[in-house]
Structure formats: C-alpha cells, structure tokens
Image (cartoon, rainbow, N blue to C red; front, side):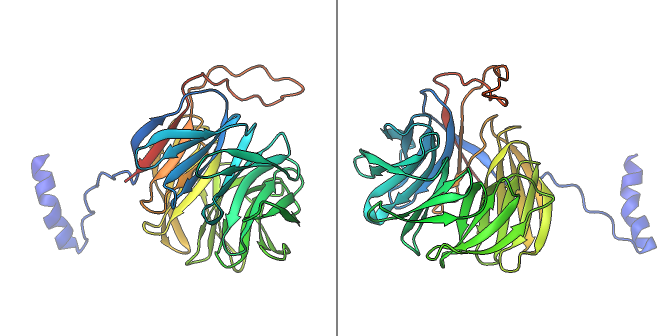
Length: 345
C-alpha cells in the first residue's frame, strides 16, 4: 500500500489532475476558558456585559448577579428582581434596569451601590431590556402583545409605548436610531424608529419559526435571527431579502456576531452547544463548528473588548409532570449549581 501512495502524485500529474489536499484537523474557533461559580437557586435568562464598568450582569431568579470581569468573581447582587429576565445598563446615568416578567414592571438600580431604587410599571410580560444610546431611551420589550414600554434613560420615566404588533424577543440596533426586534409569535423581524416608535419594515423569517436570539452585522446590514425550529435566518437589514438559512442546535435563545472574526454564534440550551457559523461574504455562510457547552446554556452576551462569550446554566434534575397550568414544564434545577461559562479563542 505504501508504494501506491507514493505513486499517486505521479499518476495525477500524468493525467493533468491536481491531487486533493490532505485532510486538516479543524481547530474549534471557541473553547471553554473558565467556569465562574455563582450558586443559589432559581432559573435564569439574559446576561449583559457593561464594558465601561467591567461587569457582567446575570438575571437569576429573584435577583440579578453581578460579576467583576477583571477578577471573574461574584461581587454583588441586585436584590428583589423577581422573575428577572432582561437587563439594560446606562453608564452615563449610573442606572441599570431589570425586567420582572411575571410582575409587569422593571426594577431600577444604582450601578455603583447595586441598590434597588424601586419599580417602574411596564407592558405585559416584559422580557428583553435594551438601552439605545442614540435616542437615550431604554426599551422594556413585551413578550405578550407587543406593547413595549419606553423609558427616558436618564430619569427612568415612561415616555411612550411602542406598539410593535407581536411578542417581542431580542433587539439589535444600527446605532443610528433604527432598532430591529424578532417577533416570536409572528416569525418576523421588524425595524422601528427609536424616537417616533413607528414600525418601518416587517420581514418574514419563514422557514424559520419562533425567533428569539438576534445579532446584527452593522457594516453589511445583515440580521441573524436564531429560531426555535433549529434554523438561523440571515436577512438583509435594508431590503428584507432573505440571504441564507442555516442549521443550528436545539433550544436556542441567543445569538452573537463578532465582526473581527466574521463568526455568528448561537447558544443552544436544548443540546448544550454553540453553533459557530462563518460569514465568508455578506451573502455566503457555512457552519464551521459545534462547540459543547452544557444543557440549559441558552442565552449569550459578548464582551466587545476581548470578544469573549458568556452563557450560564445549572445542573438539571427531572422534569415535573405537565399540568393544565404548566403544560410545558422545564426540568428541575439543582440548588447551588448555577454558573457562568466563559468562551473564547
């Protein structure tokens, strides 16, 4: 057999055929850098990086955990944020906001002391929170009916209600006053004006269904919608043209885009993976890796200073029996096992 391999290049040369390149062992573009133990009890949802304050905020049950990104240690908590979901940080006003989904309000807190400053009524089921620096507004996006409360970022006072026509999930912005959001129940991605609150465009994500995570490539105007039916849909943010549909893992809830590498990443809590998709050109994409994380790690935040990714989970126990009140129960959570996972290159 050895002689056959030695003769192969000569044979290819005589036939005018270039031999195939030898197979290369692909290096995963992300690896687990560290695990940051948090402990405690309860479920979890969004994470939010504050680059200016070098902190990571994690919505965790009835409180919001705060991690120092220099020491990678838990440094405090924002108390009394029941059913915590989304987090918005406004460094210039020294204020943060946490949505409390079952209570129809958000909590305002002090960034330096982490003191809870009180509650602000919102629309039904506030979920994702978003600070738009262009308009100096904070959006408490409603996951029930689209009545999303708009706050003045510096005072915390309600200044409007965005009627977005669906159950709103994760937002993204072009930085110029236009905000994009996924509508989970309509399987659409829409664009609206951050100041007038007028909906400017609606784009179908079919064959994608129940989109949650959203990321944006501002340079090339590409939207990346992560959908519950294991598809990532790429949309031209200017024209609404559907550019690509790619396979991702189960139980996705988050998406991130790194312009320095051209990688789109989805966090798939159902099978405990990251799907890594490379942008070869603005119109060409391919799945390049599936990186193991842990079951339940479904949301993501990216640190723009070092491009590390953060997700969180806990060890899961048995799933309770379905009931009329809770027809789709989630697995039980083992106390004391909650943790943040940090990924990088």
